[in-house]
Image 1 (cartoon, rainbow, N blue to C red):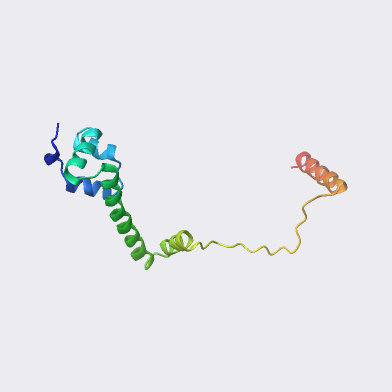
Image 2 (cartoon, rainbow, N blue to C red):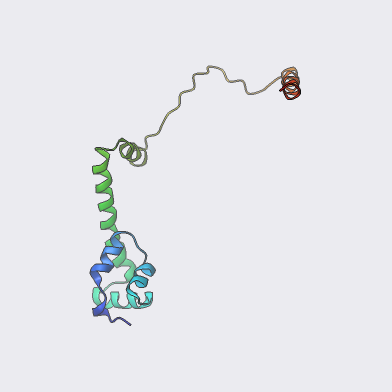
Length: 122
């Protein structure tokens, strides 16, 4: 089993940067998650949950920066960011001035007759 000084903290940081879970990181390092938590407290003087939260923020900022750059050249990314960050949306205009919500009984009977005729004479 790895000792705290043998844990590759750069690898841990890199995996946190891409939003890996503690369990995933422990698995890659071939140690128990409890061991990772224990040595984080010893070497970084904080619980692994706090340490991982700090390192994950850098990954999110990096992703945001990459998306922002991409939006300058890829219209779909600009649209995605506009919808998600600015609350923009596609608007569909209704060109019908009047929408009929109910049919009369005679209109229903006429529609039933029309459908019956269609199914008899394909």
